Length: 376
Image 1 (tube, rainbow, N blue to C red):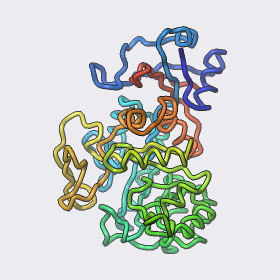
Image 2: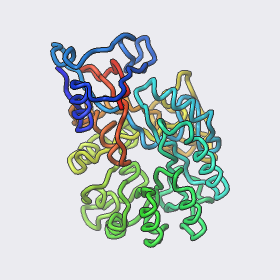
Image 3: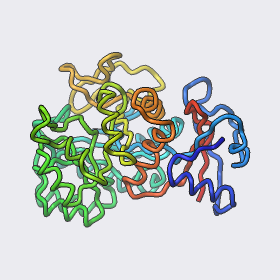
Image 4: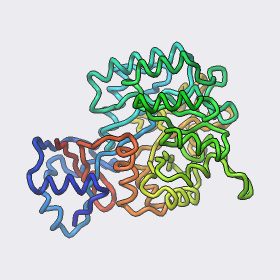
């Protein structure tokens, strides 16, 4: 039996059946061996009829798309984003079923932000199949909800900042910002230029957050984390605005450390197909070699088995989650069906970014990746 996860997959299956693709190519993914998510057989190249007639269950979905990647497999991007670093991460993530990701650089100096934009613009010439641009997570955020970000670089958006972002609009996938740090006229200009804006790292109330969405923001960054919320059921804040606003795509880190599972179940019920699985991955995610500590946001982050990736003060600094692990977590603990969990890792992020997938995954009933193909 073959189950399609989302409308993209359903359309791809129909075209696959009818030979409607101009080009079709099976791809290699998985690390091999017994690693969860590995391809079971390198020669797994079925026809649709084979999967549909099989007694076991298979799923077809777009390849995973991670919208928030600070690092992966031993590499960090916050201070050393480069072609080599992006190539390494792209190759490692493909082995784990992720064929598209958004490199993320957090709050930093104006100089580093500009350097990042220039580097990403240059890298897009050869990496456009892997990345859509960079996610600037700050510096236009709230000091009260800064998390691990360096406070000395946090600031409100200026006319000069706006000019830089507009000049490098082709290199920007989206910007995470606090409504109180971005004037509404600046927000509208960013959105009009095709730059997506995401609510995050904010202490704003619900009224300000809803106005932010009404003025063009379309996403929310790591829902619940570094985000204000109501106390005692009164005075709704940013979290409640995200859950109440139709059409907002909200990223959620499903590692069991960043967000409690009952909260994830609530988010699933409120967001529906706008629930987006993200990892907020750091260097320890997908690491082929054990990584005890590394530098991030001007501090040392420790890979604690119980508390996750934390600095000396215990502040979380991202996760070691992979997308394949996150999908399984949503099914095991988050109340998701296998189909809906796969959609959260594939269909939802593509729709959030306004993109159409070209690579698709075939998984078995245990959500192990059995094969991948590129179809145009």
